Amino acid sequence: MKGSYDKAFENVVRLRVMSILMVNDQVDFNTLKDLLEVTDGNLASHLKNLEKQEYIQVEKSFVGRKPMTKYEATGEGKTAFQAHLDFLENLIKENKT
Image 1 (cartoon, rainbow, N blue to C red):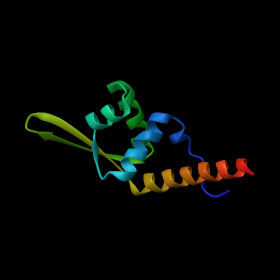
Image 2 (image 1 turned 60 degrees about the vertical axis):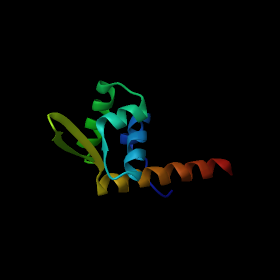
Image 3 (image 1 turned 135 degrees about the vertical axis):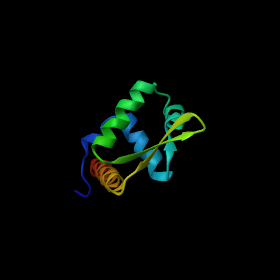
C-alpha cells in the first residue's frame, strides 16, 4: 500500500493543523486557534507534539510589545503528512472494492 500511517496525525486537531499549514506559508497561533475553535492549552499541546516530531517549526517575534508566534510546516512534515494522506486515500480505495 502506498503511503504510511503516522500516529502524529491520529488526532483531528493535529490533522487539521497540518492541513492548514500545507496550504499557507505561515500561520500565527491566534489564527490557528480561531480556525480550529480550540482552547489555548489544547492547541499548544498539539503544536508541541508536532514540533517535537519536527513536522512544524516555530518563529517567535514581537509586534510592538505583543509576542507573535507563527508556525510553518517543515519539509519533513509536509512529506510525512502527504504520505499519511496517501495511506488514507489508498485505504478508502481498497475498501470500496
